[in-house]
Length: 89
Image 1: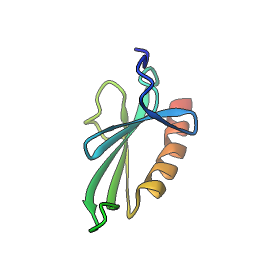
Image 2: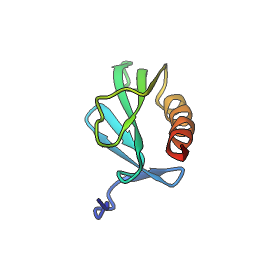
Image 3: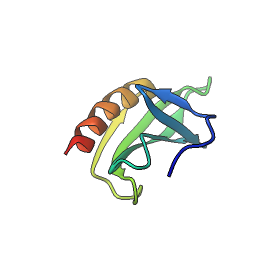
Image 4: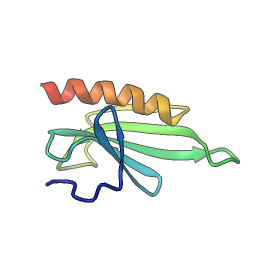
């Protein structure tokens, strides 16, 4: 599957797509993607509790590895490193 609609943000050369309080990071043709769920926000709307999950591209409900961070950037930064490792295997 190819992303034809270019209305998405890229982070470290991979697409980052938001659907509500869930973000998906990575290419759909890779074996794994990173799913980030925002569970809590402060009064300004900034994420304060974020869960990142490495999951197979074909089953985003299956958990391979998970992290819990206080901010979106930290979860995305660590998750991107993990994703790179898992997709190399």
